Image (cartoon, rainbow, N blue to C red; front, side, top):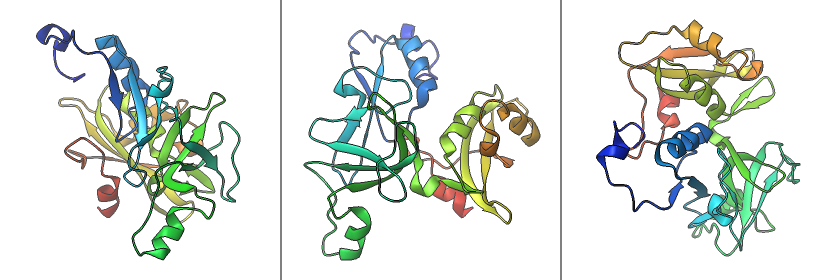
Length: 242
C-alpha cells in the first residue's frame, strides 16, 4: 500500500481507523513511513498457531513503540529466558516464552511436547527477543534464523533493515551460512531496483558504522528475486536450501 502511487488522493480512506500488523516484523521504518503517509499508527502484535491467537500486542495500551510488537495481552505471562532457563534483564536477548489460557499440546506425541513446553508450563515461541524497561517486546529473529558466528548470536533483521535503506536496494534477505573459522557468517541476498547498480563490496561498506562490526554481512549475492509467500513473508529456509 505504501508503494501505490498517489494512494491518498486516489482512494477514499476516511473510514480507516485502526491498523494492526502481524505475521512478520514490520520494522520501525515501516511504522514511520505508514504514519507519515496515512496519519495512522500500526499496532503490531505477535501470535502463533500453537498459542492459537495473538498474546503480545501494542493494542494492549493503544500506545505503539515503533519496531516493537507490544506488551503481554492480559491473561498471558511473557518472559525472555537465557540458555539456563533464567529470566534475562531488560535489553538482553534470549528465548521468548509465554503461558496463559491457551498453549501447545501435541496429540499423542510426548517428544514434541517436551520440546514445545517446559515442565512449569512455559510455551517456547521459537523466537529470540528482548524486552525493555516498559515491558515492550522486540523481535530479533526466529531461532532457526539466528546466525551463530564466533560465539555471537546475530539476527538477520537488523542487517536487512540497514541494507534496505541503500538507495539502490529493492529487497534483501539475510541467512547464516557455514564458515570454517567462525562457524557461520551472515550472507545477504540483495535485489536491486531497476536501472540501479551496487556492488557487494559497496553494500558491505554501506553497513559499516550503522551496525556492529561483528554483525556485518561477510558475503553479499545480487539476485533477481527473493522467495516469498503470497502474503510477502520471506522464506529464509528456501534461501538456505539454495
